[in-house]
Image (cartoon, rainbow, N blue to C red; front, top):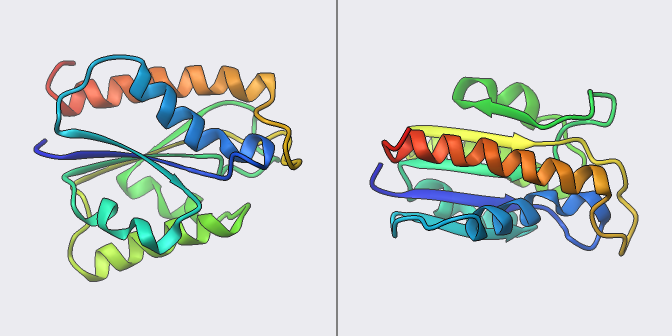
Length: 156
């Protein structure tokens, strides 16, 4: 892969909604990566992230997009598995994720590989930070992401 973008989505002000941002930060801090791997704190920027989606060969996204009624664990979705889950929104920035992928497709600039790693939030209260469960999920998600990156980089 010539260029890999790793994007963390979410709002760190609303408890477990910050999962994606915390996960991308933890992954970046977890090891040394070649210059071809870019780590982006996407927060809630929505359409302003389009270039990060269109300008890479592979895209890894962290987000807390799984509805609460799902089992409390970390989920990973690849390529064709994405659409069924992205449309289950929990916050306004997730609509941005769906829109970004749709616009990239319309432009003919969808990355060859897309992976979404997410976990269901337990607490979305203002100012609470991640719950202990979600902190544990960040660790699990980082491990999953490292395996994905190793595969894309030819190290695994």
